[in-house]
Amino acid sequence: MAVAALVDQTETYGSTAYLVTVGPDDSPHVVAVTAHWDGEALVVPAGRTTSANVERRADVTLVWPAPPGRGYSLLVDGIASRRPGPGDPTLAIEPGKAVLHRTPEGDPTAPSCITVLPRC
Image: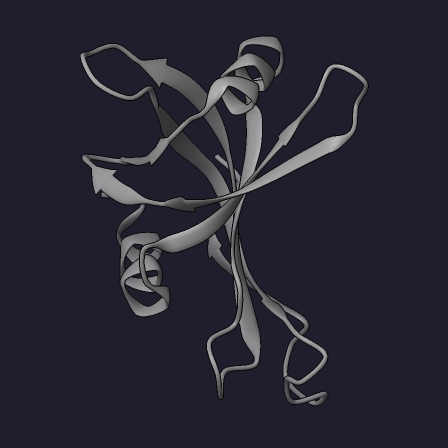
């Protein structure tokens, strides 16, 4: 599985992330979500604005802030699509690239960016 290293990282960082989409005026829209894996896709809930943004532009980013005592945030770029089904709307996000990005509190001698999943 190509995303095995990313699965490991998301288990370390937990299920709460921030989802970034782009609005019709090219402004960012950021919401907190709970993400879980379904095969090789990350699944997150999607409200009206998030769903509309994804319909216009499927490129999204998930951001897991650095946990206390860790010097890296986890950033995942991907392509989102609406999942059919009953209940609240959800998105399936196919990861395209993932990195650990050093925070200002991180060790300045450590790499600023560590690839977890190279661009597919």
